[in-house]
Length: 97
Image 1 (cartoon, rainbow, N blue to C red):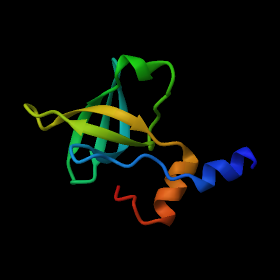
Image 2: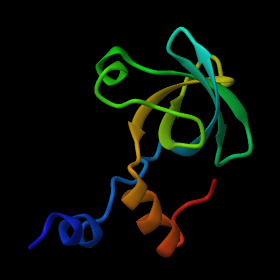
Image 3: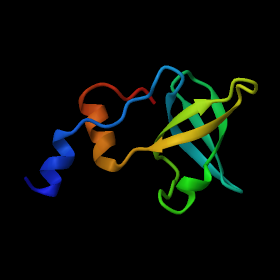
C-alpha cells in the first residue's frame, strides 16, 4: 500500500467530549493564536511546548482545542489536522468550522 493510499484509508482523530474543532484565524505571537471554534466562540488558544517545533501551526489550519474550565475565552491546542485529514473530514461531513 502506498503512502497516499494509507493516508486516505485511515480516519483522523476526532475530538473527545471535552474537546472541539476550531479554525485558526490569526497568529498572535508568544505561542498564542486566535481560533474560531465550532460552538461559534472566538478564543485565544495556546500552542503547547511539545507542538511548537514539531507541528507548525498557520492561519486557516483546522485544530482540536480544549477550552479552559475556569476561563471559557481561552483554550489549549491539542491536535493539528493535516491537509488530507481535513479533506477526509469534509468528505464525511465531520468538519463544522
